Image (cartoon, rainbow, N blue to C red; front, top):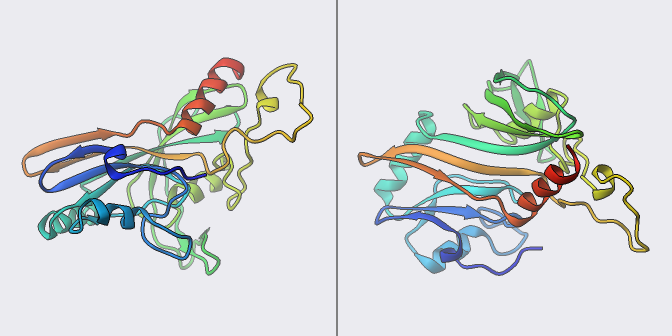
Length: 236
């Protein structure tokens, strides 16, 4: 599902210290056993550049890379001290009028590469959640992680009874056109979901760097954008 791209294709901001990228879905941030990573492609563009944080393989959106060791330290400290604000957009099942609230459920990382709610040994985890757009069967929400635990947004939404669309690890189910379009007729071919991945996108990031206030927004990738268009057309 991953199409060929180069770093210039996904640059949202660049100066002599930083690169801010719009990570495509279906590629890991750092190298693992699944193949070429974003870090690998980044090194071809600038051998000195380093990713400052990670996004899950299926998650698209804004990610920061540093071109120098000093910039890397600055961003790393900003992340640790919670001075870098991140906003994610997610599609969840159900029509929910969600006022701004803080999910405050402690989380532990389980041995099967997933997170679990753990009120005894779990680490503090906080996420601000707010509804953006409500459809008949789905809701677009914004999530701002205050802490940075593994799968934090995904488990917090699932724990609240709002698993992210197509997030099969935490109980999410995919969207099909037949779910939202009245009098939809199935063809002879098996119907495919509108999104074949967890519907989570790192939408924006905001921080100060060398006296400049940076507020960078990552456009939705094609699958997320087209799903929203279909929801706005048929699920209202």
